[in-house]
Image (tube, rainbow, N blue to C red):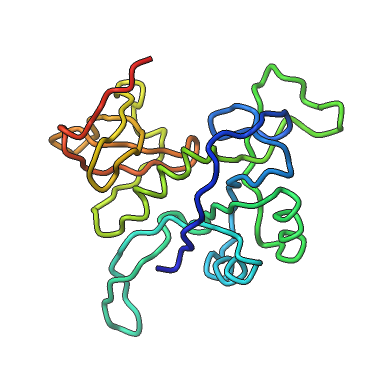
Length: 216
């Protein structure tokens, strides 16, 4: 596998303003390692090389098997689901230093609520780095990293997640994973959906008897 499997990180971290999570909440302070969402402009292969050498920074690139033609021959290879999409777990200072050396890596930004002040006291605009909470990222990687499990991918906007049910998987390959149990187009039975809001949703089949509804 070409994606590095990150080490486990603590799910609970302090909350401060300045960086927004994928769900819209404020993230942890800059000195706390977080999952940042980046784009490797037209060069995710170079990004893998850089990150592999960048002091062991944990990273994840969602991939899937696809048939491609190379030198006139069809081969089945792992390819990025979204070209250039990279998740990196690092201190904000470390990742900013990395970007200075490799300017093809760009932060994915999240726009604040339109009613918010467009300029913060620090001079920042109404955009912040998009980061993903540790538990959410861990669940997404558990699903997206199973290349042989026929995982399907969607833009979250394509799915009516509000019609689904929040669930937790008990047992099996995805034990402990939380997501939305939902009927998706083209599938007979409901599927488990684990998403990174505004970015990507991974959809996979699970046995109904392993599903536990998360009650509010």
